[in-house]
Amino acid sequence: MSAVPLHQRIRDEIEGLVRSGAWAPGHRVPFESELMAQYGCSRMTVNKAMSALAEAGLIVRRRRAGSFVARPKVHSTVLDIPDIQAEITARGETYAFRLLAAERRPADSDDGDEVELAGEGDLVALRGLHIAGGRPFALEDRLISLAAVPEAAAADFAAEPPGAWLLHHVPWTEAESRISAVGAEPAIAELLALDPGAALLAVERRTWRAGAPVTRVRQLFPGEAYDLVARFGPAR
Amino acid sequence: MSAVPLHQRIRDEIEGLVRSGAWAPGHRVPFESELMAQYGCSRMTVNKAMSALAEAGLIVRRRRAGSFVARPKVHSTVLDIPDIQAEITARGETYAFRLLAAERRPADSDDGDEVELAGEGDLVALRGLHIAGGRPFALEDRLISLAAVPEAAAADFAAEPPGAWLLHHVPWTEAESRISAVGAEPAIAELLALDPGAALLAVERRTWRAGAPVTRVRQLFPGEAYDLVARFGPAR
DNA sequence: CTCGCGAATATGTCTATACATATTGAACCG
DNA sequence: CGGTTCAATATGTATAGACATATTCGCGAG
Image (cartoon, rainbow over all chains, first blue to last red; front, top):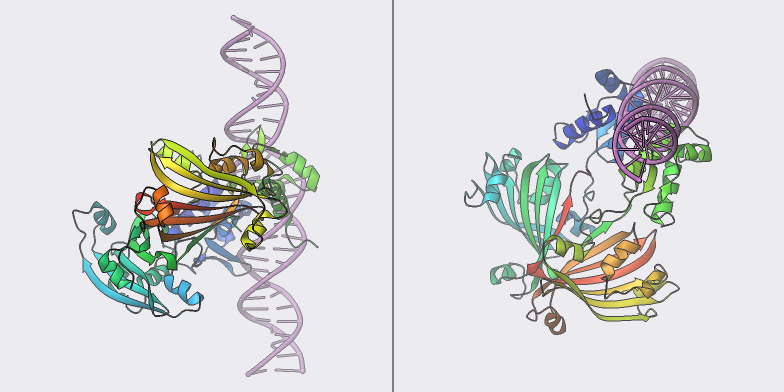
């Protein structure tokens, strides 16, 4: 006995295929008529599942053409600062990213967090500086799990900053952010061209895809120069 | 010609009644049979509207009993730090709120922001200190619009902190938060028992209800003592 | 008066059908 | 060859009916 209704099951299965990446953005979802045959049910039942997925933003429906996995909008996850580059250029400032260090290494076995992120594979460890209008804007330390994103081994993060690269290559992630304020340590103050002890906004974000950890990043912003904005309101 | 489909119109009208507060949490929504009669349509159409509202969390549906306006969950709006008191007690620490100043006054006509918040009425201006485990936890400066919330004139904010009071009296709000880091000025450092210049996490939040501004608050947290956590993921 | 049981009722799910509407691809014509 | 028209198609909306299921209410037995 399936306690879950059929329309929910259809919805869940498709959602799983999208979120896991098995169906990439742009992939065509089966027509309602195909799903009717596959699940042996009426069109209204399929339609209920698909309408819900469309409302949730996971798929896009086009008459006559069919339904397709949506390409996630950059700002769909509020406050994710998904793409610092996009934010800065949107403000009309010039943007640059300076890669300070990059290495491929196994997880530090003393750091349970790194071990969990790495899984069976190695990590890519990056440090870089986001520069807006010629001035340091944010310092970023990032770890990427090669188990989750093997393509990251070959990516050129000097050409495309890691945040943007991940955004383009790994859609449909979930994230948890921790935000706090810290005083700038001398070495960091120098990188950001600030006085030691200046207030910094620290954002640490962990990202998963279909339950598997993908990346962990810590970004430090000069506190008074940057406002993180988050909006909460009606879905539409 | 109504370009909007009927199920959407039903949905919008009920959503408006809920968000505006015309129907308070707990209020019984008409039965599907009543709405069928009111809109002259079939049950499936009404059901589609109601199911969507239920999924969005605006109403709660109970078989045999009917549908009711939901009471918003404290953590429905992520990162709203909706209730500092609730957060602290959830961590097992003792909580106290010390009201430092409270006055009723008209808006400062030089401050366009205050004028917009006040509308036709006065403002309540509050300053208070949140105390966790006997130590200062956050300094809060708040303005409440009496035009939007007349009951606030009579509320005792020494007994119930303004954040919690608003949460209980004004449901279904939308908010925008700006988060930054600042160094503590001497007067503020003293209130929070910190050294001058210490890094503070500054959260400024504006809140609306059905488009009308309700309150504006600025909270300062000792940066290293507090993490703001925000989660972004699957709706369910 | 209390407990248990059955009837009433509102929602939950699903079907089969119908027509509307946007969009595409192909046939057709200048 | 380029543009227009038109029919095919997939989704969008809506209906009427059916049965399932949870919950409540009231009645009757103890």
